[in-house]
Image (cartoon, rainbow, N blue to C red; front, side, top):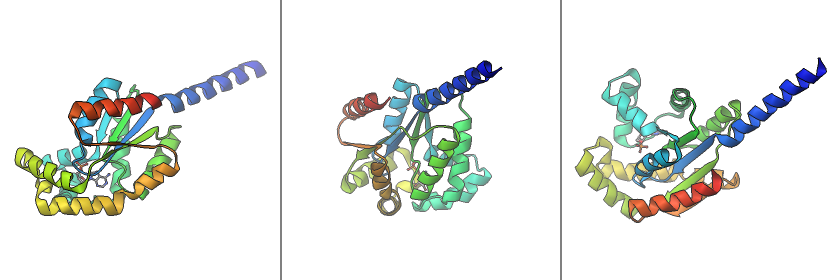
Length: 212
Ligand code: AMP
């Protein structure tokens, strides 16, 4: 009787270890307009990861005029952050909507220390952890130029000059502290986010290949 119990225990431990080491939880990090969305789509395809963009989730809800969409519209239009308490449940639902994936790219999440702490707890409860945080470094002037251009092309309401400047301020104040947070955990890498899409993608892949 003892042998089968030990055997089952060892098998479970093995499965948990496999789970910890094989779910690749990748955070793509950077200011608004640094290219996170564009690069995430390419990374998701190459590495077979599920792409979770909290900004896309909010935009979809706003478009469909859901309760969540109506609640967050004015916040997003002003360039502020949606309250932390709404984020973790949205993220849980997004993660749970996928099964059998090799891992995730989190794009636009976490954006505050509180979100990062809650995220860590959530992953821990699933025997997982953040695998890598990769930051795309782009200076403010370039961001403003890019986002003004995107405003013309896509007509996003949060891409007016005033809102762009506010989004950058919010990024520096509330999101940038996460760099130190993840550096302390030894999971932080950064690359220069200016160049062609393919050049930046190739540099991102070089970093991912060291971790995946
Ligand atoms: P993004 O497309 O990632 O730039 O997100 C667009 C907007 O959605 C942001 O300016 C925020 O208002 C909101 N948002 C997206 N992700 C988050 C998040 N993790 N925490 C708070 N607000 C968010």
